[in-house]
Length: 318
Image (cartoon, rainbow, N blue to C red):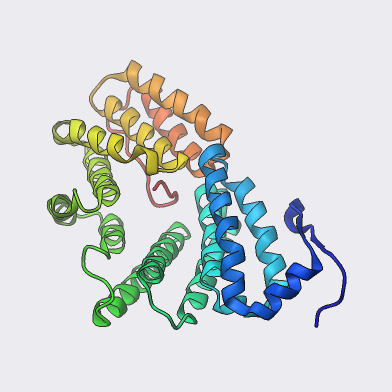
C-alpha cells in the first residue's frame, strides 16, 4: 500500500499532478492500467509536438511523466505504452540534436524502450511496428555519436529476429534497410532503394516519400543536379501527399533539400532565400542539428559553391 498523500513530481521543471487514489489504482492495476493511463498522455504530447515543433519542451513534459511512473509504478517495465514514452523522450532529444550528452541520453531511452518491449508477451502489429521503430531510432542514435558498427548490428539483429519469427515482411523492415543504405552511401544501394520504393509507393506513401528523399539527397550530395532534377517533381508530389502526417522537423528538412537543390542547380538567389527562411524556422523550434546543416548550406550559397554537400551523419530529419 502506498502512503496516503497526493503526489507532485517536479522533475525537469514540469509538474505531474495526480491524486493518491489514482496512483493506488495504477499500482494495483499493473501494466494494463498503466497502458490505459499513458495512451491519451502520449497522444497529447505528440499532438503538442505537432503544434509547437519544439522537441525539448515535449521532452521535459515526457520526462516528468516518465520519472513519476518509474518511481511509483514498478510494473511499468511490462507496459507497452511506457516503452513508447521512453522512445518519445529519446526521439525528442535526437530531433533537438544539441550535443553528444543529449544524444547519449537519447540512446539510453531507446535501449530502455527496447528492453521493455521485449518484456511484453502479447505480440501484435503495433508491438512489432514499435520494435522496428525503436531499432531505427537506436541505429540513428548510434550513428550520430560515431558508433557505426553498433548501429548496423542493432538494426540487422532486429530485422533478422522478426523475419525469422515471420512477424514482419521485407516491406515492414524498409526503415531499417533504408537506414543501412544511407550509412554505406553507395550508388548501387541508392539505386536499389529507388527501384524498390516503387513497389510500396501506394501501400506505404510515407515510407515511399522517405526513400525518395534519401535518393534525392544522395544525388545532390554527389553533384547530380540533372539526376535530381528528373525526380524533383515526383519528390514534391510525394511530399505533398504525406505532408499532414509529417513532423515539423521533417518539413524543415524537406525545405532544406529544396534550398540545396536550387544551389546545386545554380539558382543561388532562390537557394539563399529558401535556406534563410528555413534557418529562422529551425532556430525558433530549437532544432540545433538542422540549424548546423542549414548554416553550412547557407555559407556555401553565399560563396556560390554549387558543390555544397549536406552532411547527414549527425542529425535526424525524418
